[in-house]
Image (cartoon, rainbow, N blue to C red; front, top):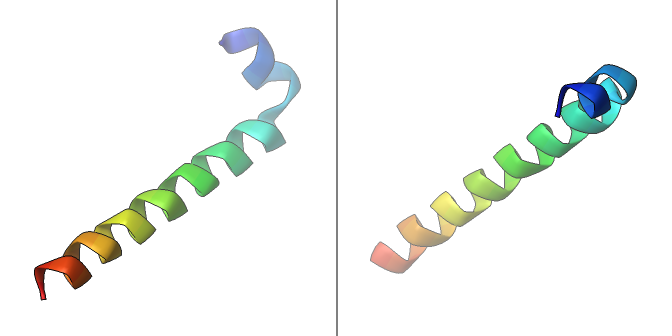
Length: 35
């Protein structure tokens, strides 16, 4: 989506940051369940 990323770089950055934080949380959940 080059058009959206050109017009809304802040939204793209926020989305990638949110996605990475969700990934970290789910990884933490997996480690906790293993214990």
